[in-house]
Length: 96
Image (cartoon, rainbow, N blue to C red):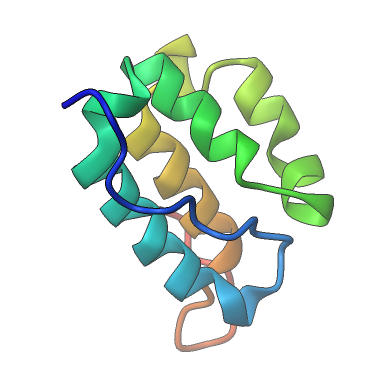
């Protein structure tokens, strides 16, 4: 597929209440338009491009390293963001 189907997800600024719908938008975007976005590294960079403010600052080091092992894995990037922004039932950030 050469052309994207879905519009770009809104930029995520670090507001925890907005994270679950943003994450779902991003998962759909990558699933449906991933081939149009490009390689895994392109998709990794795309995720970073849809962050702003506190969220972008928080993820900069992770993104600079290409994530775990420098693999530039978009799924690992989303898992990292989830570990930062999703609270478990005790109000503590999840560890996965």
